[in-house]
Image 1 (tube, one colour):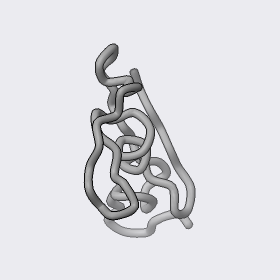
Image 2 (cartoon, helix red, strand yellow):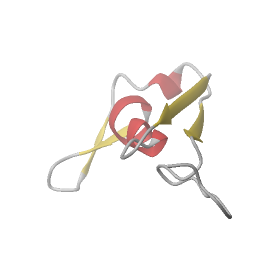
Image 3 (cartoon, one colour):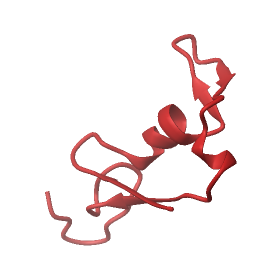
Length: 64
């Protein structure tokens, strides 16, 4: 599956940690198993878009 997030303050990494991943980060920063993880059924490619948001990288003139 291809997963894209984009926009200021919106990262695909957040979806991995809070929605689809095998674990979730709790408020005390400990981890708990995510029993509804999508990763048990599909492979997911997380793509940051547009360049410059989330953990993506832009070398030069990044659109904002």
